Length: 301
Length: 301
Image (cartoon, one colour):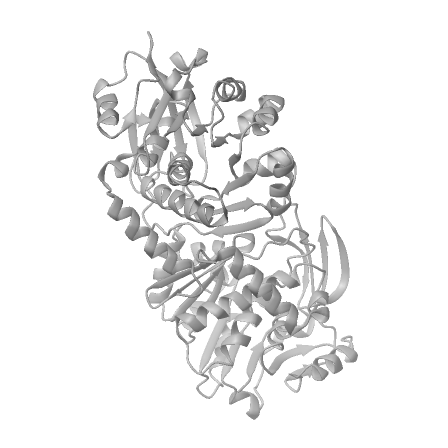
């Protein structure tokens, strides 16, 4: 059974110390599906304006991505402009134009409601609630969020966290969400909010997973030419949930593999602007990099 | 064959959000030897003032630590006062009184020159050169440093780096030393300076090792009640070199174990002020925590 992702489809203008990419394709749903498609069929729920290139939708379609849930509305697509400093760790937003995304409140198509895995990308928690409420008992549900929603829509966010299985969140955000500097304590606090699994994304330091009383730590795959970190978190979720969606059960062993695939997919995406690198790679590239990463982390090999 | 550590023996006053410890025992040589003594005999080379408690020297002696290389000079011992903010990541120095440490330029005792492993703790690189030059072909030599020496004694530091096998350095320092933001690239640059092995300490994110073209990444053991991070780096080096000094050869497998023991020793020291936690633990505690950490990092278990 397939995956549904609900999130932004956008044009991004990104400036990093290594270059600039103007009005390239972006948005969480794009990054997620471009990573997850290597593992399973993905349905996108989103909205674009009339300015969105039809050939990208055709491309997604050719790649086993279901675009029937993407509405094309009058007006312009979501636009984001951001800039990264030398450490590439956090983007400074220069401009956000919500455009057609402003009133995005999707009604899911019947075939999408029945999908077994759902990813609520980083959008307004009230929209996340609206979407998850329409799903017919998905096997696995996950959400991502950001500091803006932690501050502005705290109650809605807490509510939707209690409605899903997995929370993807970064270092700074989990500290803010739990008002707790120690990430280990914060993970325990998040589980009390009702999720079963928390995945803390730590950028160049990797990721950690907390599930059923077990921590699993995975360093990032080392990339010495990071061009643009945009989309790394969504590509991570794409690899993670893409892999997970192909498994019958969720246990610590499956989750360890999921976090490895998430890490690998995010390591590719940051090597080029936009999701260009994901257009080039093959399943073989994913397997090779996975083997390399295991060699760098396993004590016993 | 044993280990020699050259470094500070001090009184520290440390303030963290969780409390304060006034004029407690500290200094790199103390932290290092309190960790390394679990693995091998350690000889300390250092200097203290008349105010230093003789019972601590007696305690070290009772713990298989050779204190014959500690000079007792007229005057007061080295004193450091520092403060940590909420994130516990970097200490702000409030006061440093070098006292008897100011003109520290030790002449090594004959039995110490023949030891097989040497650790040059974070001191003036010109003193590090003076010490390493007196050693009779140690099997393994290592040094630690800090931002102050990178700025103030750059040439001497580059020289001593070329004289040792292993560089212990933290994230910020390696970036500064190599003028390179990307830590992976910086590791490669450091190897061109003449060391064989670089160990990058990343605090709560763990450590990474670069040797012979191989990276090995180890997350930190999760501690949810960090009281005082002082000495974590020196306890890390103590566990690392303590273990390494017991091995006949240095290969990637031995180094992976060394970094694990370094990580474990630093995880203990931060649980209490000063090195009080190291007074309590046993070899069994070290083994148990090592097994726990392996479970948290190994993909295959």
